[in-house]
Amino acid sequence: MGEIINVSKIVECKKVELKERVNLLKQKGIIPKLAVISANHDEASKSYIRNKRKMCEELGLSQEEYVLREDITLNEVLKLVSSLNNDKSVHAILLQLPIYSHLDENKILMEISPKKDVDGFHPLNLGKLLIGTQGIIPCTPKGIITILDSLNIDYAGKVAVVVGRSKIVGKPVSQLLLNKDCTVITCHSKTNDLKQYTKMADILVVATGIPHLITSDMVKENSIIIDVGINRVNGKIVGDVDTQEVLKKVKYITPVPKGVGLTTVLSLMENVVYMAESF
Image (cartoon, rainbow, N blue to C red; front, side):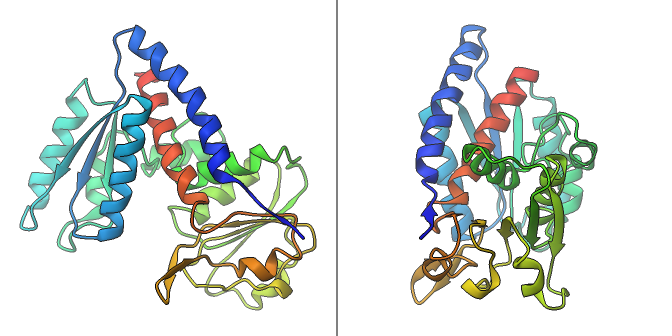
């Protein structure tokens, strides 16, 4: 029988370290500040923003929110981003996705200064990730590595299979695992016979949004499973992995909920603090 990873404990330990870094910044007269731009009516996004605000308050960070009206123009949003880029009190800018359909997401993201791009989506930051130099790492992939690091595993030569190729999770986490000397296989919706690849995985990361896609016959004995999925089924939140069945076979698995989502918010805070330190 495997073990469900206590992600809450990992996050609490990391918070202690972060508070110390924030206190050092405050001694220098610097209060790390995050500007959040919200342009949607999505309830999940509102919940995510509330969680971020709560952790900002807990760690002593400042968060300023800009809730945009539905008829706002792209030019108005770009002007707001430009003013935040030039505001020296703001260390990090977050565009909360999704946004209103009439707005151009890519144009807005490209307008955010790479130095304030807290999500790490700017091509300059993604390029640094590709070549393995210090930069802003997207929050969910960064959180996944935080969880794996806590297990004290030796990455070198491990077969890591990532199911999903989004720019938010799949592609960046594949690169991070490659940077740690794993042998990485990235699977997606067009992959034939997914099972043949997932059964090879020492480390399996699943980010598809398909409830219980991964079953016990698809995983390797004593492997490590990172379930990024958040799906609502019959009023319950479930992951992309059939946790209870898979748990009988693997060594470690993340829970859903209270799993990767917790480290995503933590990683955002870490990025804000890092940016304030680098300002």
